[in-house]
Image (spheres, each protein chain N blue to C red):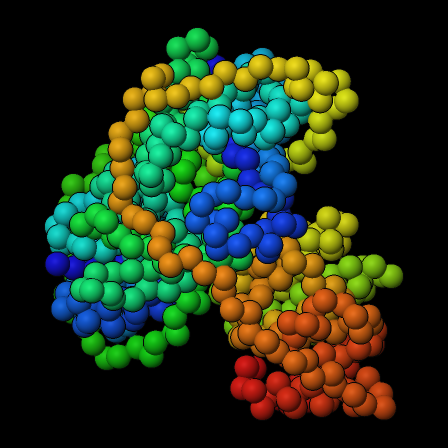
Length: 261
Length: 326
């Protein structure tokens, strides 16, 4: 059993507020690009599972042909192989075209080493949809577990995991192959080691393009009218008073008058 | 033509955010001249089905089977697709919870339909449904124009006002042909419900959060913040700094790498207001900041502020509200 981990290269979260409508529309971002923070948990889990169960790990990312920093970060953390899907294969397409391309890439990885587990993060900090892994499961025809907080065991062709949702926590058993999106609680991502960074910097990462992958065109929805949300300009009213009790009483009165309590 | 709304349930109880969505669907349905149907999937749907009529569904479709007692994607998708086909749905809407999000995504992918994931608004434009959602973690807003016959959306909780129930009732239509337990791949072997009485952050009207400001005595600090929350019937939140420092579990985290919330009132105690935190709560109706540092960025987004120590201010607020809410 081997693992493919889906990752995305996204803007550094501290730079997200600076992204302009023009940048978002064209995809030409000036921001520092990093491994999507939610995907770090998926990469860490892949490495951890390879230690526990002796499987091989491959990070798969879709992006421009030169967008390899996130993949190199995954390699530096300890993933064994990396593969870039040139996003021209799904150009102009929607989430399902992207999912189809990633599923096709997973199958390609599977031709060399039997992949039975795909790991993904909760969502990307740029697209914010959290649907790509669902599309990949759909395209592969595999089962899907989401918001997994712990992988308990993998044995006899089955995987046992704990998953959280708003009302509680469940333990689920599912036959392989399976796609899993991981939650933040699952682990603590490691920092790449110095040796890892050196090794990753020398790695040459294979790129798959439209000659390698058959991707069904899909355009079921379009993003239109991008805009910066107007931040309501509020002038803060600092509540003054001679004592904290007085300040608290005045604030409580103001909030009661706002009818929000 | 139908707008189909999935009503999520936890142990037979409908998730109340779904009524907001159902009422919105009813308004959209009037504009589009389409009926609105509620879909219930579970082992115990009777009460929620009648509530669905009361909250605005013209039709209620239900699949009931012991194998549907807990959410599992495979049988739930099979039934949702059955309902989409049976009603000739032009839209399939779900609450953007963990389960609603994955159900909507899977139905959309299988039906080759466009999806507006984590939508914050829905409206009719040129006789078709359109949606708004945030991208770049709330820093850009996009409109979604659907190009497929079926439009799918998972909608953020508290995007629309909570409706008042009516006296309407109706007859539930049964959806048949559920999968046999033997054909369902996933087996749930254990289940632990969240702590009783705990108010979920995404549903809360009022949230009281604590941050690094509690550092002098984290345990005492969160005890005080928790008491204020309890007095206000509010959910308890926290900043990433407080979670990373181990003061409080991750499930309370609000912000970019935590939960996105939009309560009527958000009281930030000892939270400086890093952009990652603001990304998760900036859309709250009224923000109140309690912070010792008058230059904390949170004051730029707050409507009310108290510049003082939270260890004295928060208990004073608890006392002030206790008196007024008696």
